[in-house]
Length: 229
Image (cartoon, rainbow, N blue to C red; front, top):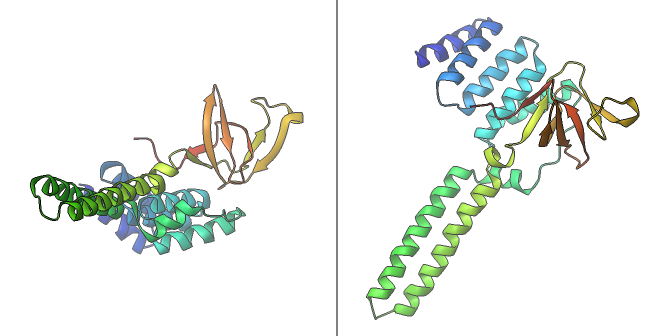
């Protein structure tokens, strides 16, 4: 059934039935393990249905799963340009993730750690070359831990866990305090803008903008980048 949904989605996308294709891609993503390619294709269907913000959200979700997926990265840039959302500067975590994805980093770290652990046991068991084995074990154990730590620090699924996107067509207003008092308004963010959710209070989110500015948004019109389980 899962495969049927995906195949139905791709068939409809190929035949220009974009809204129907988007529905089937969404059904597939709800019932099957998410994939970068499926989110990208969903974004294509939504974009061709003139749902630009929804498409941008799908491209972001694609990149969470594979930061090196160039078609989704380019599609997101184009969608943001059409939405009037300025490109955000990528930090060192995003640059690292684009070069070395987290899953291979964890694998490399785990292999290095266990080889180091084996050499450490061998050093205790063997009298010859004990110092050399201890040194090699220490290097491999530290390297393994470092790779696993870097994976945790750079995995977009962890780094961007609190990211949300403005989906309201009219954008959302940012206030200094959780109040709709016009005198407390700081700015308005366009549809497609992203924010980092720091906390919630009633109907309000305390958020941080990409540039570091903080304020309060009403929760309406804000969708988490990582979908709810």
